[in-house]
Image 1 (cartoon, rainbow, N blue to C red):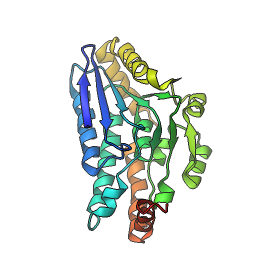
Image 2 (image 1 turned 30 degrees about the vertical axis):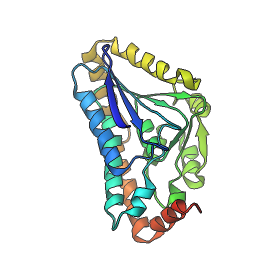
Image 3 (image 1 turned 60 degrees about the vertical axis):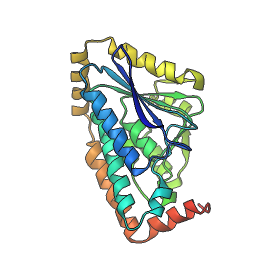
Length: 248
């Protein structure tokens, strides 16, 4: 369990999140994920990365229970820094990252999926940002890469979710497949990329990041500042405590 990497002989690195019960990563888990993605991208033998998860869903964001159990603001600061590092690692990975999403993709999961190069999703996958209900903000930067602007705003304000089928209609998800076919589909996409000239693919990734209209790292860091403000004003702790107690 935790974050594991399997290197396939064809140049595909498969990184798996397995943190029961819902893949809500603790502080260290975000840093471990960032390290795994960076190691894979820096390995000359890696030509593509598949990021997926075991269990009930892809990712449920940060471990709010860990945050509430910690004294002071250490866990909040750690989670924010860890998410920043993990999202940045996916975006900056030297080779394309294919995210294979099943079940829920919420909060921090949106940061990972939104910064991936390609998404494939299971038919049961759904995506959302419950941040407002948790007294936090963030990852709208990444959600805006998945849905149109006005829908992104509605999702942030109302905390509504969208399905894999909706994202497929927007062109954000490449393929929607039965859950049993998700891993095979993601690996198939990665293998097709891995069959290309690796030098050209790495330059393609670099060039596409270079023409992005939004600096995702700076944009996300800006959002995080408002999470710190909400926490200082007491809203963050109040909503997190409500969630932990089962009232939120």
